[in-house]
Length: 112
Image 1 (cartoon, helix red, strand yellow):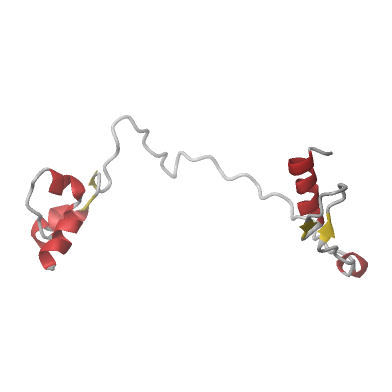
Image 2 (cartoon, helix red, strand yellow):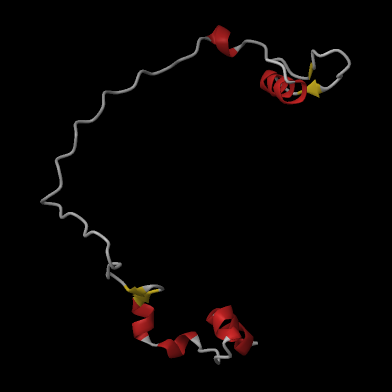
């Protein structure tokens, strides 16, 4: 069982090449300290270095606070239409809400 787990950890490329599976413990500390694409902290060739903190521009002032939107009680207590019958004659489709009816009319009946 341990051999099959090690083979699965080695990856399909190693198995296809016929390479024997290498256990995780046998890879050494150097492999554990490096990332999957090379040593940690190394840059990719051609990538730009990150700007240092001293060269960064000062942060822009914070935007003004947003207006708090509070719907009225009448807006919140408005009845919601559900189980709406399609308005096209002969269709008979029942839709759960108004946006669904609008989409049905556009997609199925090419209206609106």
